[in-house]
Image (cartoon, rainbow, N blue to C red; front, side, top):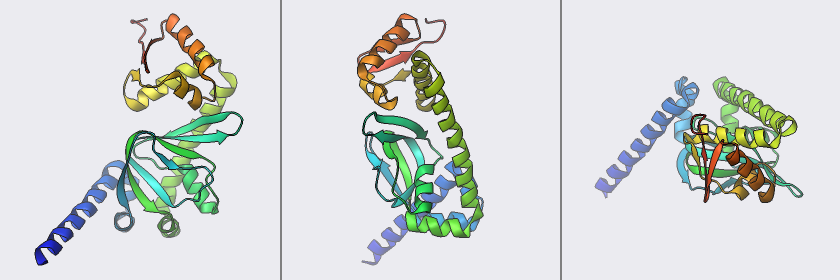
Length: 232
């Protein structure tokens, strides 16, 4: 029994040390203050979520705040008539600003979060986040900086959707996804891209075929390759 307790204690210390290293590596602004770092280490846990797993549903209350340590999560706005439209991605080293602002208001989520690539997430209980926000200005500064960055992304998305032609919209979407995934091969169907951009599969197929004809992409079954200028 004593041996088992020692093993469990060592495992517990290993997890705490792992979380501390995660904060230092991916969330340096949260690890600079030892008191804040130590508190996050004590109250958080590490979880893995698979591709296409829904981690946040529209209309539900916020129970946890995610800190992304690997993978990619996309945040949607659902609409009864127009389906879904992609708002922004949560990348490694980021959290979900909509979850945070919704939690502060005590409201239900206006968005949906879906795992784009298998994600490692440091999860903090919502009630503990509220306590941290009251005690540590460094936490609030992290959220404000994140909000500012996501506001710029949303503004760019709205501008693109409103003023860009559809060819440019789709090409920007593909290039952005290519940068996020660090790959020129985008494993998406025409239907999935249409859902992300609030369009239909038929419209998206026409646009993608035009982009292929113009030499910007190469279409394959279930994937799209972005071509460099010398390949087109």
